[in-house]
Image (cartoon, rainbow, N blue to C red; front, side):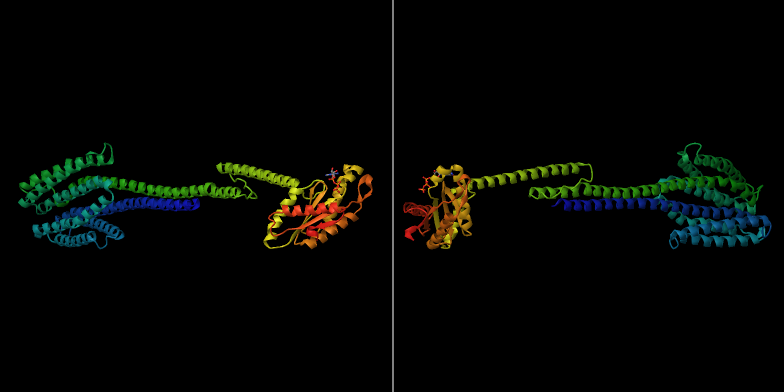
Length: 578
Ligand SMILES: Nc1nc2c(ncn2[C@@H]2O[C@H](COP(=O)(O)OP(=O)(O)OP(=O)(O)O)[C@@H](O)[C@H]2O)c(=O)[nH]1
């Protein structure tokens, strides 16, 4: 696979992997933050319900006080206190309902429990108002008890919803479990303490001893209250000293268990005897209820602790979400940057340098080496390629020069330096190039061999230098009068040879005759010799079918030349006397 394809494939895989991992981690953190937020909201809803239950429970105090009032219709102060308590309860129920509506609890068990509690609350209030309108002597203990029971029922009604919200809050935010359980125990303690107090309402209103059932219930409730005290103390024991939880626990132990409970115990003792109480129901409520506020204070402290933990947790989760999301984006950005750098600084330069090296290796030395964009390893490679290219250019120049010299040497070895004509070797090189082609197509070929007459005399008379000039002039004369395609060469000494392709014996003889006349007619300016003339003798032979090489043809032409010399020179003698 080519590098750039592999690179893009790796990029794709990396990007997908990082994206999936980042999305997964962000989704987990998102869920954690959402769970923490929902936990916070669940604790808030739980608090609203505990407050609603507390208000309904508190309302029993003024209710009991009104039912025990000696004035028919109740005095204005107690009525106002009851109205106030009822308004607080209504406000707490309204707040709870709004919180439930906002959280989607509109149609579930929690809302059903709240509606049921609201119905019983309304019914209980009606019964209480009806009893309060009766003269004290006509108020029946069973009616009062039933009305109190109806108010108890309000709390019972809320219980399933309370459990539901409790579970929801603990599931959504397990770290706040202990504090929530503590708050729930405190709320339960407040309820049981309230019920304990309510057991005296009938006896105080009727100013009669406690009945057996009331005494039994009081004992049961005292046992339950004690049990809840122990559980609460255990639950809050882990709280360090001088913290809000520790302080609230101590205040509850001092105020409720140290003050209200002994008061209840004393009243119980009185209730077992004559029923002559030194306090009425309203007075009892005024003495007993405020001490229960210490329990509520502990509940609120524990709830606040749970809320604080949940808020911290939610804030941590949101911060983690922001950091993780930012980290994921940064990782993606960093990955993109890394891949961009690898592509621009490694892969692409590598492709370009590879293409360049391949081109240079294939002999394309015209390619210019690009200027490096960065001072890095790629720049070093480009520099090295530049050096290699320069070396290749130099080597090619050397090779060209060597080739030129070889050609020159070959030309020189094939050329006669005096006349500029091909020498014997050059003649055969050229002839062998033509001959096979001519023979293959059956074209006639003829050879003329000619020699300057009495050349020795020229040398002897005018010197060797003049002889050289004469040789050159004869060569030039022959070149001028040769046909295009003929090959003329210096065969040796003062002897020349002429190859005439496409030329039969007669034509060759005629051509030789033309050359002979031309030489004879040429006046040569050769130094001291002045206008010198020479003649030449020609032997002409034709190439026959049986001739594999030029040697037999030349031999026949040489024989004719010999005859021309012998027969008086300055003549042309052709093979077979043509
Ligand atoms: N100046 C000069 N003379 C050459 C050269 N090559 C050969 N010769 C001379 O050519 C002469 C040839 O003489 P010969 O063989 O006797 O022939 P000739 O004098 O031409 O007489 P015929 O051929 O019989 O007509 C010799 O004197 C050689 O020295 C050369 O390159 N330059």
